[in-house]
Length: 78
Image (cartoon, rainbow, N blue to C red; front, side, top):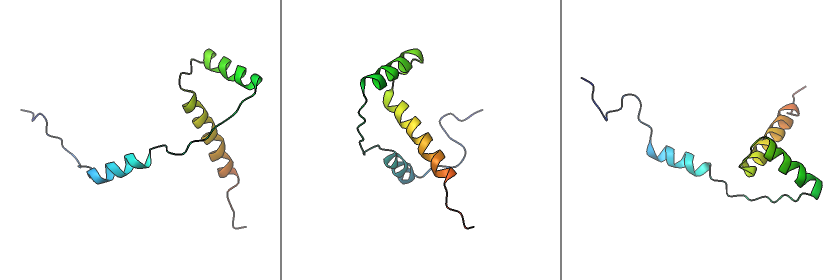
């Protein structure tokens, strides 16, 4: 017989989960201004590729660029 409702395996500390959740809250706002051509290109991209969440698009594109630049230009010892 199987025991329903009982989980086997490690139990995660609820305080840890609360800290993890709190660290993911996005509380810093940035504003981007676009000219007409940039806005038209963005709208076309979103229409063509069915992007519904522009903030996620900007966040992913920006962080991809930032992280790749940091990785390429990391300090070296020699």
